[in-house]
Length: 78
Image (cartoon, rainbow, N blue to C red; front, side, top):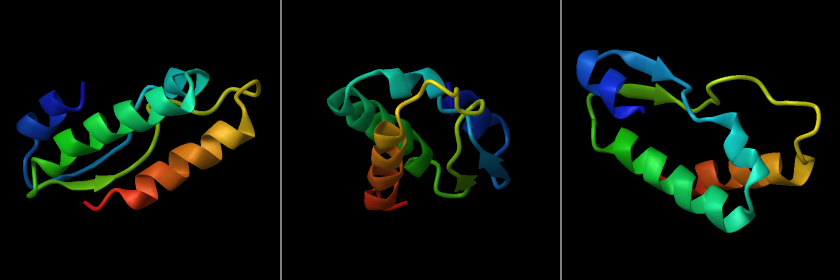
């Protein structure tokens, strides 16, 4: 959960923490969960945030879904 580190280290930069298993879901779920995740980050305006996954990508993840994830993140204004 991203909220705990956001509260524990205000005014610091954070990176990552999105579960990469989300990329096995359909696009609607990916979009909804990424939006919820980024809204939590946005609620802590004093924390700098670099989007990243909590772990790397697995070889069996669909490239199309990875690209979709990047598009969703780019559309979200932090």
